[in-house]
Every structure is written in C-alpha cells, then in structure tokens.
Image (tube, rainbow, N blue to C red):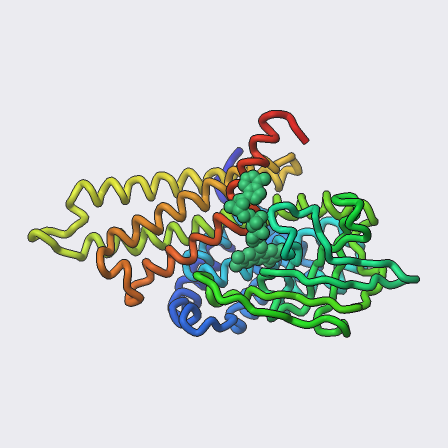
Length: 382
Ligand SMILES: Cc1cc2nc3c(=O)[nH]c(=O)nc-3n(C[C@H](O)[C@H](O)[C@H](O)COP(=O)(O)OP(=O)(O)OC[C@H]3O[C@@H](n4cnc5c(N)ncnc54)[C@H](O)[C@@H]3O)c2cc1C
C-alpha cells in the first residue's frame, strides 16, 4: 500500500482544501445558525467534480478514486460538517449504487445530474421499524405491469428535503425479509404520490436537512429498478461499505477542526502567566487527539485503497468508520475542555464540532453495528 499522492490526487486535494478553507469555513457558523442548505457551495463543488469524486468523467464526476475522495471529504468536513455529509450522500449513498449496479441508460439519466452537481441525491433506507435491522423494511414496492407502486414512509433521510433524486430501498414482500429488498431510483420532483414529511430538529449538522419521505401510491417505472429483484440487499450492504468511508472521513475532518482550533487557542490563552499550551495536561490532550486522528486517517486510506483495488473491504471500512467517529467524538470533547468556558459558548466553534461529531457514531450503521460487522468477519460468519 502506497499512500503517496499522485500529481493528480495532490492537485485535487489541494484545490478542495483551498476551496474549503476560503469559501466553506467562513460561512460554517452561519449555516449552523440558520440551518440553510448550502446551495451555492454544492453547485460550485459540483462544477469541480466533487459531487462525484470517484464517478467517471463521462457521468459528470471527477474520475478520481476513493483515496482522493477521503482527502476531499476530510478537507470539506473540517470546514463544515454539514456540507461534508451532503457531499458524502451524493457520492456514496446515492452515487455508488448507480455507478456500480446501474445500466448505461440509468447512469446517463440519473447519475450524471447529481455527480455533476446540478442537484442533490439521497438514499432512503431507514424507517420507523427498520433502523439497525435494515432487512425489516415495510415500505412496499408492488409490481403492476411495468410500474412499481410505492407505499410507505422513510425516516431520517439526509438531503430528503432538497434532493431531486433518491435511491429508495423498498420491499416486494416483507415476508421475504432481506430477499425481498429492491433499490429503485425515484425522481422526487416528478413522482405524484410522493411528498416530504416531517423535517427533524437536530443536535448537529444543522445545515444538512433530515426529512421523512412519504410515498402514497407513488408510481415508478420498472426501468428504474437497480439490477434485478433479489439483489437489493447485497447492493444496499455494498453501498453502506462505501458510505462508511465517507462518514469516517467526515468524522476525521471534524476531529481535525477540533484539534486545530484547540491548538491555536491553547497557544494564545494565558493563565498563571503562561499560555495554557505550556501545561503538560493540555499538551497530552493535544498529543492524543493528533495521534488518534492520524491513526483513523490511515485506517480510512487503507479501506479506500482496498476499495480502489476491488478487494473485500467490508471489515476495514467498518473499522475506519467506527474508530474515526469514536476518536473524532473524543477529540471534539477534549477540544471543548481546552477552550474552558468558551468551549461551552457559541462564540467559538468548539461546541459545534462536538454536536457535529456525535452523529458520525450513529448514522450509516451505529458503532455497535460496526462492531457486529467486524466481529462477524473475524468469526468467519456471514
Ligand atoms: C441526522 C441523521 C441522518 C440520517 N441520514 C440517513 C439517510 O440519509 N438515509 C437513511 O436511510 N438513514 C439515515 N439515517 C438513519 C440512521 O442511519 C439510523 O438512525 C441508524 O442506522 C440507527 O437506526 P435507529 O435510529 O433506528 O436506531 P436503532 O436501530 O433503534 O438502535 C438503537 C440503539 O440500539 C443499538 N442496537 C440496535 N441493534 C443492535 C444490535 N444488534 N447489537 C447491538 N446494538 C444494537 C444501536 O446501536 C443503538 O445504540 C440518519 C439518521 C440521522 C439521525
């Protein structure tokens, strides 16, 4: 494994890092406060190919690899965690299954607009009674002639309030459990019977909308099925493997922001006649934060490299997401502590990093579920 960047990878990383620092970071606090979808940023990132980093250029992406995607996600999420998850969903949860399982026609029609950043995509799996237990879907897709009729409610869907397109996980028959799962591409703006339901009020990632999607006798052409019936659950699991690399990277970006801010503050804040950075108690916190975040980044790069080399990376992506989000959460809490009273106030971003970091331990499979995935692999279970 060689993580030295090629000239092209370094160029994209540099371009995205500069854009994130100059155009996203300065508005991150405002986005957090107003809960505004960062429309203009998404469009610009789209023009740069970053809404489809690893999507071939013929479908509107940047034609890069997953290693580059990790670097882009870290840089964007360091500037703004909400923008980070929007980018991750477009790339991974929405883009990956269509790139991997879509026909040429499906890619042209439904991958290109999202990968080129003209509009947002989303992935709708979670329901009231299907969270960690993803096979127990109740959202029905009944084939009638050449159409699927959709009925059900999806919950907690990132981008759900703004997305044009959705990859929807539904069941042809709940009694078939995972064997009944299918993935359909849905045009949310042109599907009668679809509506956006409740928009959640959350703790963090406040500029990223989290919405209910409601389907009432909504009709979708059978042409919009990804692959074949019976393949949906496998497609979903592989999409989540890819997605976990995005969320692990989001977490590391947030952790790095917490570290950078705390480091700067510790050098400036004087107590007992010296900067608090001279106290070993503060230095040890900073040293642990930096070490753990570096280790997490290496786990992410390993998982990304394995994906790029078409290896089985299920365990490695689960490890990277779990560890990355756990150490990001820890770094964000320590960041607040280093800021003292100001860590608890909105004047500095330390408290935002703490609110933003928490979700990374929960979505795209809670960290308990990541441990289940890792242990299953270790034990040779399916
Ligand atoms: C802000 C946000 C954005 C989201 N975005 C999306 C999205 O875009 N698309 C989408 O489909 N979903 C999305 N989700 C849903 C998210 O993926 C789920 O919330 C998550 O997978 C957990 O499901 P749950 O909330 O039903 O928790 P539950 O499954 O009810 O879990 C509750 C607790 O029990 C634990 N638990 C459950 N089963 C086990 C087990 N077998 N072993 C050990 N512990 C277990 C869990 O780890 C957790 O601690 C989002 C959620 C949020 C909050």
